[in-house]
Amino acid sequence: MSLVAHARRELLLRAHRHRLRPEDLEDCYSQATLELVARALKGARFASRTHIENALEQRFLSRVHDRRRALSGRSPMQAALEPARSIAAVGERQVDIVDLRAELEELVILRQQLRRLSRLARDLTPDQRLVLASQLAQVPGGEFCRRHQWSPEKYRKVAQRGRARLRRLMADDERP
Image 1 (cartoon, rainbow, N blue to C red):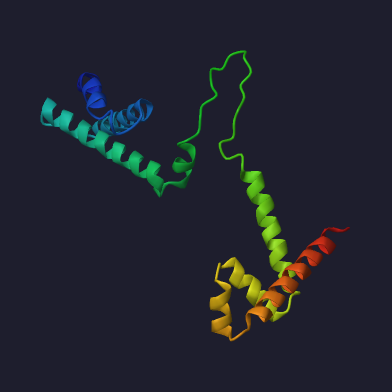
Image 2 (image 1 turned 90 degrees about the horizontal axis):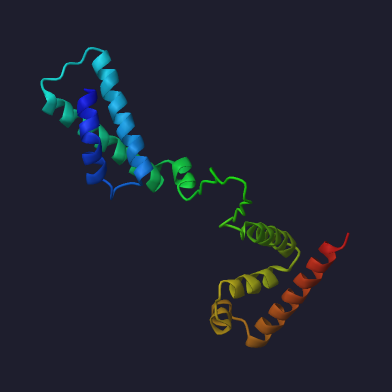
């Protein structure tokens, strides 16, 4: 069995190099080989060398498909690790690790501000909340006035007062 595994290795890795990275293919091939060895140790018999070759290729392709499924998102851990970069074998030189998602801190700050804004908006009048929400949803003022039977002047005044009150509430909230 080891002669077959050794002889088929290069052929299978080369034939399927478009499916995965070389280290992933090596891992899949090793797993497939170990599965066949374990099966043989449990007493499985193979009819011929061709039978061993076919069984090895079948196991190998099964591992390749499993790995591709894991990388495509079925395994959140594998999907998260896929874009990771190795920092092994860097030697004595300093390595600058760059976080490709460096905007994370900015996102956290914006989410906190949004939660604060949502909490403070409860102190606005129902009309002010309605107008500001429609502006956030980019509903045109004319459409809003037709839908709610408001005059353009009322819409403008309520929106202006709502924004001013929200600014004051946010300024007051920032003070210790």
